Length: 427
Ligand code: EPZ
Image (cartoon, rainbow, N blue to C red; front, side, top):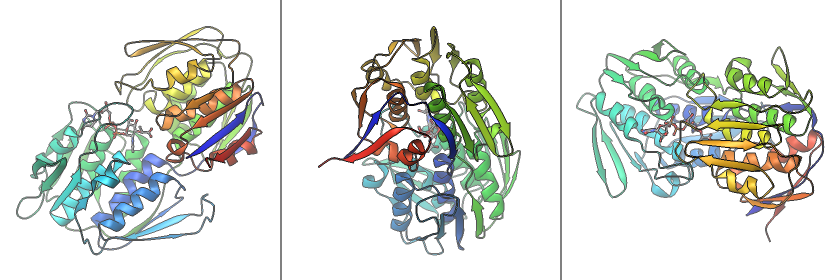
């Protein structure tokens, strides 16, 4: 396993190009299963999760071709041809590595009439059930069977049929599965209390490019007029708003000044509002957002919420930044029941954080100290990197495979803006 070594204290300044979004590409890739003609995804990020999903699609019989962007970057693309579906089973050894594998369930049962997916199981940030995914497919007429750790969905004779799906709570993944399945269901489907994350908008736009008919894109009520088939398309993955927010926090915690190229203001409004509240200077023009420190960091009180609220995927990164603020901040995590795994590791670097149920009180400290710390999940790993960038002395972040799931060429991007960072392979 690799580790990342950082010698903290450098002020980060310069330009970072934002890559394609992990949480968009992981729902765009399974779209290919809905069509018997190739789907080409451009602006493809080089991420471990993309490789894992590619392997899953190959297991199902789809061919995948990568081209361009030798070392990542906007030129990289993947063509997925699912004309022939050879298997409808997503096996445990793949699903256990990546929860997003559940997103083949909807497309497979819609296109091939059935799908068997290993239950994803919990992960470091909670048990994360899939009951809302299954209820949505049942509403479309699918029969659900659970056995031996697998969930099987079987479409009725004649295929899925349109229905009203009303989610009791907002779920990004369940909305994505429902939207993909409804695109091939006979008749009209209305999805109520749908998630409104930008990645859902990206999914809807990709499905429309493939011939789907969807109304209400961007709202919490989506209306889908099902089609007999979808055709191929070429679609460019949206920029990663969480990557952009993470590097904005890098500028903040090091007293720096970074221009985020490709970041979209609309995707980041709540994050930029939080950064502004923390005292950062924010400048937007064309496709660039500049984030510059402007005096000491100020404490912030915020709660995570579904879009357009403050994203849960930015909570750990904000916590690291606020560990250096002048005063006490209050963060409340409302989406996941256990998303404070980064707290003990940040404390080992000198942060003063007290978790009280769903909330955390972050008392700013004058300095953080380099240490050897352990990553536990993707965004927690990034919070440790951020703290290390501001800490006195050297830090070693272990288990960086978590980071490689969601941040493309992290060391390269950070060293380009002045970080003293390198990756060391474990002998
Ligand atoms: C997506 O996960 C993202 N992952 C997560 O990003 C993100 O944190 C999350 O949405 C919330 O924004 C991808 O897009 C690949 P949910 P997802 O369904 O779809 C509960 C990252 O770091 N729930 O919106 O799994 C669930 O337990 C990752 O990039 C049910 O109860 O999230 C959670 O408490 C982490 N039953 C809440 O809903 C269900 O059937 C929100 O989950 C589904 C979810």
